[in-house]
Length: 143
Image 1: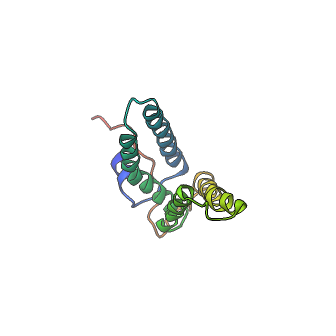
Image 2: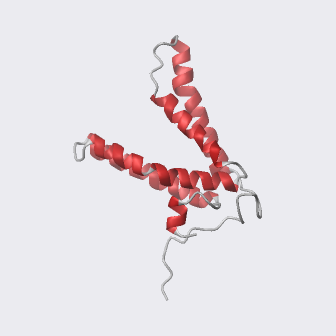
Image 3: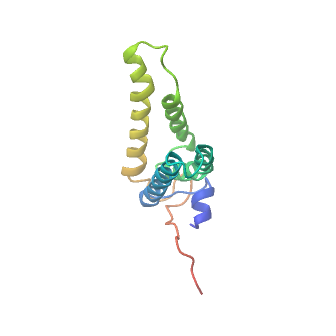
């Protein structure tokens, strides 16, 4: 699988290694972006725009990993739900409900998705989403 297929296509399947490589790249990029924004070196809007630019590659990698687990890519919408719950203003709810809806449920969703996608082995052999996993070719073949 090429880098372009890995980051921009939702077709195919990837293994745990390539999933964790993307999660690492994403985490380092987020820390760098918002550290630069916090230090005043770039605008917060620029950092937010860069975050939005990383949504498609993140969705592509997540969907391909879900496919390897034999699940529909629609399961990735759970991450959108978690993000929305984290960003919500739950002050209208009584005390413990604010914590439960605004922190506990999204954290549970994110942790369960990371465990499912990052720890469990995918479907062996071909499944309805394609052939067995392909490793990403991070370096171009020179001939």
